[in-house]
Length: 351
Ligand code: KG4
Ligand code: ZN
Image 1 (cartoon, rainbow, N blue to C red):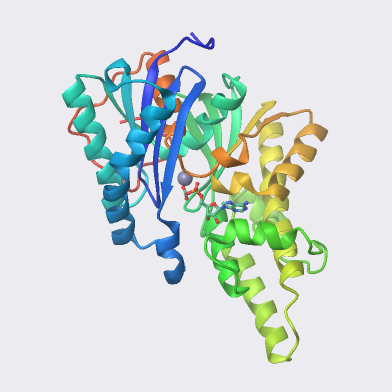
Image 2: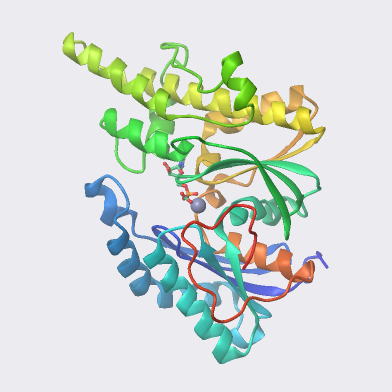
């Protein structure tokens, strides 16, 4: 079912945060991936404003859908199913995508699949590298979530083995960027600044890696102490009238994040005896994380799959990819009265 012209033809709609995404996928082949971002409207607030995001989704959805259909050169009638992000995310933003998806499913008489956004970040890799061999460990790092997952079957058997006990990795990037006077979203800005910085310049703390923390939080993460350490370091320098070496701070912060994420992820592979690893989420676009994880996975004999950076941030194709997975696994379609689930648990792949 996974050849070039095989597999179900699925439309995916994503509106959980500030990206309006519509993707079209046939099996594991990407046919269209159109994204309209409202990020520019949030920049001056230093973070996503939910009301602005919802209104932007309303304005962007129809044209984004039309562009995706044109890009894929398919008609709505050709679709086998509609997949949509049901959660987690901003309630008002999710509702826009859900309403559109339900309307399409109802009027076209096609099945609807309410999908977990986080699983989309893992499933998108299949569009690049084909079916994910399981069991696999997945490291999911986004703006709102940081999870280590044991994936037995992407469609319905995903277990959380670790998470952040405070900030998400992407959140730490966004907050540290603000401290350094870099723009929102912070991840790409820090990644760029770090290219010319010295990652050994400052030794920032690695959360939950001390022996006593590891006993209770072996595969959990903490980034709030790191964020505070960066803010203190910058403040101390400013009080001493020292110029801030932004690129060195960015590189050293990035190294602390990548070091702890990769060390715990590879340790999880070894602990669970799993030799397949997949990376996903907006922070998976980070250059240092990608490189260090590849090095450490290779050293441990673990095969790493990384979706291309452009597909790591929010998009509709990743939601369509999960729709395909659900159909191929024979999972029942969702009811047309599903609601937005802002706090949907990562183990709940579909509604
Ligand atoms: O997955 P995503 O697009 O949205 C959520 O589901 O949250 O992730 C957005 C996050 C933001 O925090 C952003 O700063 C971060 O991903 N990000 C990066 C990079 N590109 C995006 N973080 C580090 N390095 C990057 N290159
Ligand atoms: Zn996301």
